[in-house]
Length: 91
Image 1 (cartoon, rainbow, N blue to C red):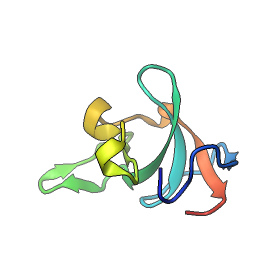
Image 2: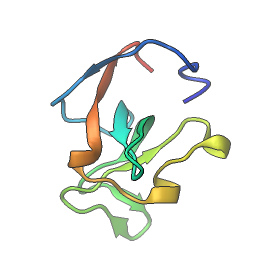
Image 3: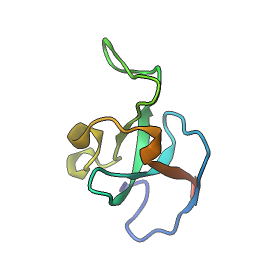
């Protein structure tokens, strides 16, 4: 998530908060590893022209697009994969 968050930065993450586009979240990637990503689009949002996300689909991207493992690689995630929303430090 550089340059927004530097590696090793301490985060406060709250479970159960519904994220919105633009929020920074912790997600459980397909391999089970927890990743910090930004919500690009959520349920009902248009992810790309002509592609609207379903009722439990989340598109997440890293801020460092050239070096990020995110939805471009592993696809959309379900709410079950969202661990929580980062509330401090803010992005």
